[in-house]
Amino acid sequence: MRPLAPVCTPLLLLAIGCGGGGDAVREPSAGPPVAAPAPAPGPVRSFSYETLDGRELSTGSLSGRFSVIGFVATYDVASQAEARFLAGLFRDHTPRINAALLVLEASENRPLVEAFVAALKLPYPVALADAPTIAGEGPFAGLHHVPSVVILDAGGREVFRHVGLITQEALEEVLRGLERASARPAR
Image (cartoon, rainbow, N blue to C red; front, side):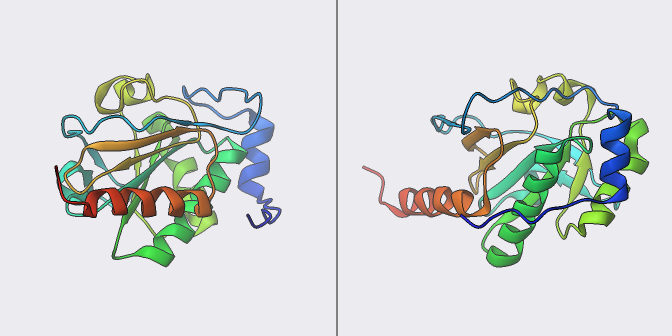
């Protein structure tokens, strides 16, 4: 695992100094984050959010390949690192995979989210979550902690969920395993 480069931007300092303003909760970690067991592929996650550039981040827009979705908040330093790990993953593995960010903050924080995206130069779609998603309800039920990552298969079914910071290298390992498993013939 490569070391994290120190990242300090005026935006980050402002966010830390002001305590942020959102409803997402960051759980304290007692040790290294542990991935939840991969759920058995269940029903397709049906969702649709508007991205900052006015496009759609949805089940349909991500279908056809594995999709890695990060759940973050602008006021959380670990979320900033997760956004960068996803940027590396996106850079190194597009068009094989999709990557996107879902910011668990209210719509009135849009200017802060836009500044966060610009400061980090994020190359993938970024959308603001709706109130049910921020509360841990809706298509990603139970997931309202930051940072978190979900991987959907090509059909839009959740096949991996991780609460806590996860590196690009760890995500690549998970994706390799998922790709191997999906390439095996069904019994």
